[in-house]
Length: 227
Image (cartoon, rainbow, N blue to C red; front, side, top):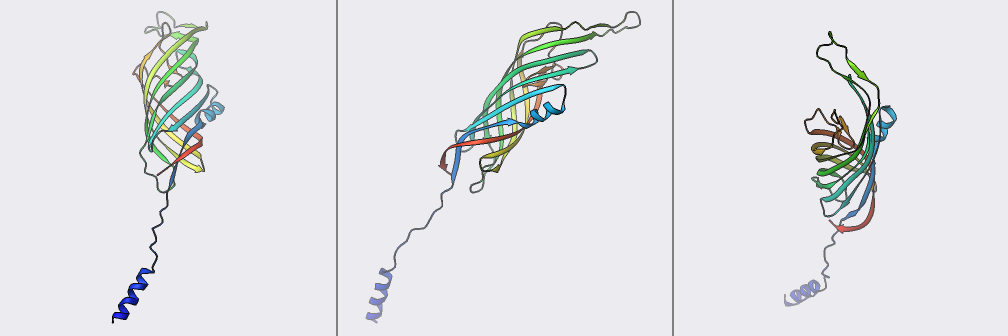
């Protein structure tokens, strides 16, 4: 019995103690740069619109990104009483927060964001008609004399809800919608801005605007961190 016990202890001592293997997942950090596909397509199919936008974001923390957009637009707006061409540039800067919990090495986003936007633009009044409440006694007055108003500006804030999905390694397709709140603007004499680059349609002085974006972007991987 004593011999059996000694033999068993000797076998236990000979068993090597091994540590458990662990797999570490790395998350990518870097600069992601892209363009707005929606504005490019609209520029080809809409004769009254030309626009282009470049977007970028940089991952600061696991779910927090700094982000921004830079673009140019030209839009002709024609109504029963006005024909206006708006042209100018804009810049937006802010943050995005990823609400989506990725599995393993996935790198997708469902995010909420905020931007501060600024635009500098020109308005060209091509023609206009002054509405007369009693056209029976006097005709409607119309003018085709072109007037230009330069150096106009606008500032606003916007809330963003969107998603980005990784199609291939470091290549992303994105979609977002934007709700805009106008803070200030300079207006031409005798009429209001009906369109502001980067802000879009002004919706009859309500101070609210809306927009959307379809983007294709590529991340330049700079470094990785453990997930």
